[in-house]
Length: 159
Image (cartoon, rainbow, N blue to C red; front, side, top):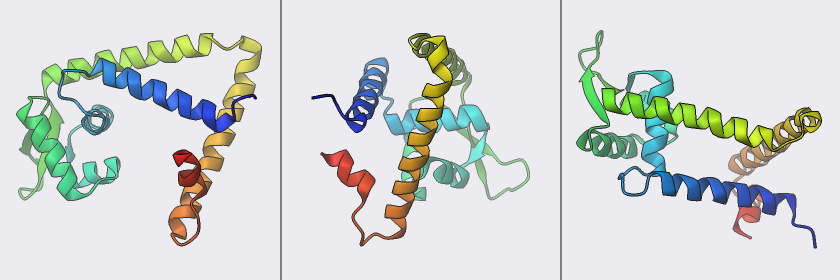
């Protein structure tokens, strides 16, 4: 029997998870911490409040993430230039260099994955991915809007 599309997508997600775990093994960086670093690398110095929103975590969780990344030397807190009550979180120089390497690796992996698809098939593949992403996002939003209804996206993820 041919694997379902969902099974293939879950396999891709699992491969990315395993690759991230391998890449950050022994560094003390978790997926949540890397996500926060990625947000900072792309948005620049930010308040913890804006980071909590960007990372979709509670203010308490962002404090723990920032505390851990400060202790490990990945980020630092600095005074906000216009709001003396606020503090900015920014990458250290070493982490900025690490994130630049990560961005280069990201682009290289993207190019390698695209190269695996025949040039004539790439546009159709991207349209198909966009459609699947849009449909899954709609299912997730729908499930979040009506918590009593069965969540199609999450119930399928568990199988």
